[in-house]
Image 1 (cartoon, one colour):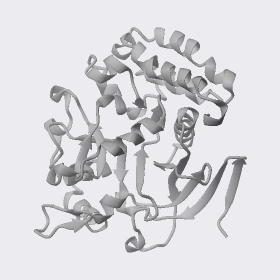
Image 2 (cartoon, rainbow, N blue to C red):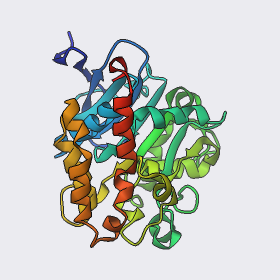
Image 3 (tube, one colour):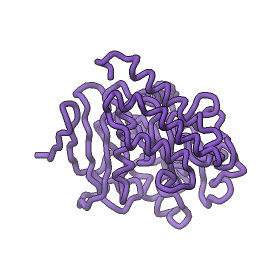
Length: 324
């Protein structure tokens, strides 16, 4: 019988064995499924390795607070399991999945990015944001020693996937004239490029979508807003116009003083509870903290950090109690 941890009347954690070596990781994890209501739900996945517990819990909290549809989380965590790589079929019971890094914060409902699945055309299997908006500061176009998607590559920190299409697709590649399925292509790619890749699974995804560009839906930068979008001056126009939808605190900026605007949002959500009054009172203290960051490039545009968050809070309290 699978171990279960009941959190409250609407959530429980179920522990399941599941290998993850297909992503190029050197460990075999457990898969934790956090189930919220036995109805149609959105699926969100994250890999939590090393000292990532607090970040992961804060990310999950940000997803739960504002989302409307039920969520099921798939949390891959380090552990030693002895399973063959070939035993792994990509979450075969899941049709679609949103994968995020642990340093992600949702500033609007998960439902909104989930709805982008409906915008996929008939050939698209996944969606990601560009790695850079400005080629002059791009990493891939300046330093990569392997193929990459588009002009500046794509970032895998937020990846929306149609798993059914992904399992069925045969991918073009630079290893053989024969097209290969997802489960057959990742390890050979890793072996071929292992001395040339820097960013792990993200580099492998860039190589795959370089050869299969028709399979990728590219969403705007405010769905994956990172320090690179503001530390050299603002270069995400969508965030300037509509605010940040998903905040990505890569480079450890939630835990140091290099980008205090990012840290302020993280600490506000980390310290927030699910009590209604606590969520209502989230914005004013956060804005005061953000105003202290105007000495930085990101802090100068601090209002984009709270624009969508303020809307999400308003929308939460505009919904009926049954919808919350």
